[in-house]
Image 1 (tube, one colour):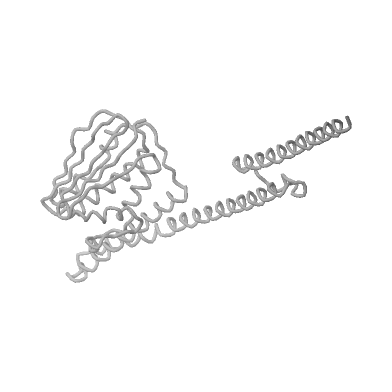
Image 2 (image 1 turned 120 degrees about the vertical axis):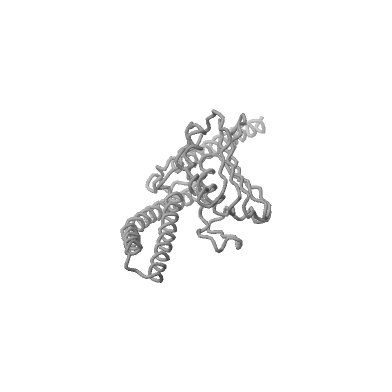
Length: 299
């Protein structure tokens, strides 16, 4: 009889201990869950929890989230500094470059300059244009990467995108045939301004690296899930192993080292398309040309 009473008492104590441990564990996990949710929602603050009453696990989680919150604040501060720096660069360089371009044009129009001076004036103008292009490219890249400019895809017509590509004069000036195939009446989800920027960079490269007498062809293909835009040229082409490098920031192929450029255009192409759910791929052969294919989602 006494043994039965003892066993019953032991079972009661065991049950009570299990209930206590369950309640303590449940309280701990609820506390951790509230911490994670607060951190996710961006409302986690150090004063929201009393570390003295937290378990060892809760304390470690608390310290981890505090550290993450501090890192996030630092990143936001650095981001704001970058924004201010980019704005300052853009503002401070705009007037000097515009003035240099104006002065070189005035020198070129001055009929009293001899041939040598006229040649120097043309060279100055060319270098100023390169400097302006470099600064504008870097500013554009910085704004995109820092979040100052956002890619906002929405339903747009492909025909409107293709119609914005104005490179007929540039192709004609270089003696290149530029053709645009029939564009089907279809829509896709993309940011019109930034996607036009991406396509323009590809077409500009195609014209730049295609010799006189060559051709650049733009075509559109419709698929159920996406729209595909091909820019095909008969330019210098590249080796297969190099196709994986050309989208890297500041990459410049040794084959085009003599051409103007800073190695940002194709990097921007990949960044822009990636931010709106699209992508780009390239197929190329040395001396045979390249085909850049841009894919834009339709759903």
